[in-house]
Image 1 (cartoon, rainbow, N blue to C red):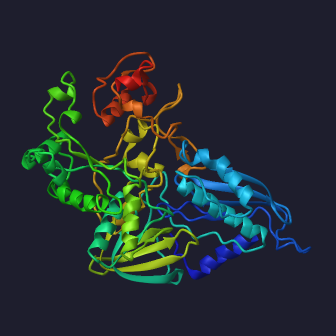
Image 2 (spheres, rainbow, N blue to C red):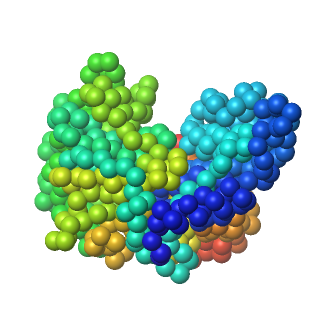
Image 3 (cartoon, one colour):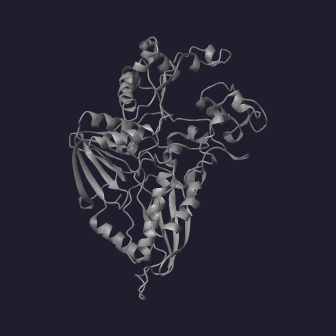
Length: 509
């Protein structure tokens, strides 16, 4: 890739002022871009806007969101909001409400739609571009970073010109990603008074996974659960994975999950939150005696912690917690690349503002923690790294914004990539009859592809009801883990199946 220089940036800015500039989507730290559909300055007759139709785009949670606005000299007369590439039951469904809000407000400052925060932010950003164009302001398309492609998911590390880095921050620790890992790390760092910055490419903390597994936690001891045989547990996890796991990682969880829970509970169960911990274990978590699973020696100790009934998601609580201690999250700031010294030590990151595309050098005296998630929203990585998992997937419901940029940046810096992909597969994607699993063409989505699921997550799919292929043939033992059912469908027509149950299914569950 050519260097992104100040001169090159100005060329792009000039081109944007004259017409349309098209740039590739940014993996992992997407920047807004806009296209000018009409040009001119404010009306010569004194009107606020130059009449015409204008388009603006911005990156949503899984696609490029487009807003088209028509202006008279004094008002917005029509709005079209295209969020069709977003998650079907959330962002995509919010288009009509967002349109009505923009029309009613007469500006880009709207409330947005609850549950579709990132999509709402993208619509507001695209609308701001439309207003700017209608008022004759220059709209600059942001400098974009390389995305990889259908033949090379990794791509080339960006060579960012020093002239393009317009800010420098100094800190001890940089945490990249405000999701489940990053926010827990930030709360721990804040509690211990560490000097850190946490950056997040999106405009809000990520969705909370309420449940987590622990062993020998204070909650388990409180309920009289005997200690787990840790050596046997390590052996069993390795055996169930066919040895394809790093036992050092497993041992870290075995040895430290109890301390992790004590830290989390110390915040969630204290004032002002006073949340109640729900621990699933024992007979409540036991598989029925007549299932294949209970007849096999699977000795995983189910000690699942759950705060899902809490008023606020854990990540929002952690945000409030670090803010109460004087820290903040640098939203709309995504990872561009890791920086390292001549001896190979990671010294910090170069980040990019997803608002205007400028670059920021963040020097980290003590280290960088990557908590960027996986690559569920990157079809290049999914198809090339996990062709089997991709072929049996029908819906990506939880992390379509994860495009693997943290993984790519780490590999560019010299990190080791696991030889085998380890996706999290749920048997909960719902598609119409005749639709196959795997990607379908979706021009508005990142990489031009999306999964065909019409419902974000169809939870009854995980229940052990009768499952048959398109010929009406039963082909699996339904009492098995999520990924087993998905992988079993690989051998069937279209890599899908139908699930048969009666109207009493809720009572059965």
